[in-house]
Image 1 (cartoon, rainbow, N blue to C red):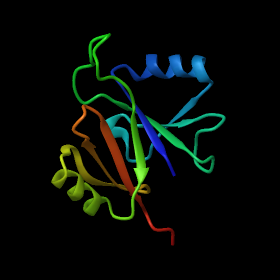
Image 2 (cartoon, rainbow, N blue to C red):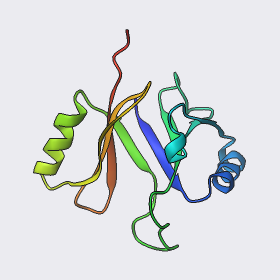
Image 3 (cartoon, one colour):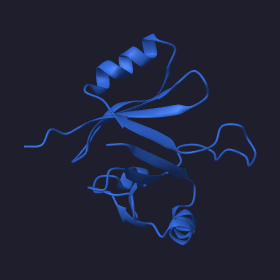
Length: 128
């Protein structure tokens, strides 16, 4: 299932903006408090709707307005997060976020693609 993220500095302001823009609502993700993570729910976005989205606190300074690299992170499902991450590093990618387990979600990592973009990968938890 495709997943996207929006990185923000001020969650309350950003959530109000996207609520007004797209009528999205936000729910804090269990276990995501450390990174200020909230799940997005909207007409086409949310669990069971074909695409999921999240908003999280930025891990560094915000890019200046008009800077060339700005935007969200698209995350795509892969069979093996660690294997795919290693392939990316061996093929011109650079570490952005090493593979980590997210309780109730799965294993996720981010890489820079060599073009100034960050892309995410996730291996969801196996359903019991």
